[in-house]
Image 1: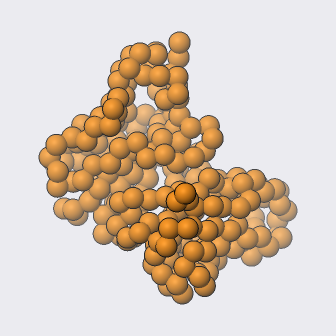
Image 2 (image 1 turned 180 degrees about the vertical axis):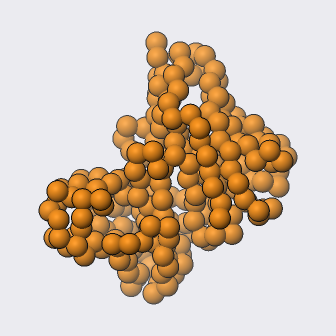
Length: 113
Length: 113
């Protein structure tokens, strides 16, 4: 089954404690992206990747890092989480850069206290 | 930069009735796609309907249809014969030449008995 898998689905952490949210897709997609969803703001792009070792900033990249060492994986790293990063996070993948058919992960609810 | 505006934060409709969700967008591009995504309480992002800008015919998917007005940059979603399972957050989204989806702020739809 074609899917994007994120882990964990829920995470509560403390300010400053480094964390990684994993994302994996099994469709051999070149394009992957991270979004955060906040009430009243919709989904906003954090980072995206066009292929292995090729990443670029989205609209709200501050406080986040990503890496793309393998085609299937695109982890999101918060080196020093802060309460304003409390949000719902989605990983997505697409075969092409036009994102006309996007596949989304199940979402990760992150709370930073 | 592209923007997507959803001016109705919340809407309510009775079961079996018809409801229309509004979306406007702004872009200088001529070739793009528009989408409506549904997000039920499970948080999953589900593609409801997709419209290609160069196609004049409005897209339909069973009880879901759109009214695409390219000149007015309007892209509304009509849900006919509303069902309880339609209760969800609905996001309008745009993709063009930039490698991302741009989302509106969402409309929370409640279907009541």
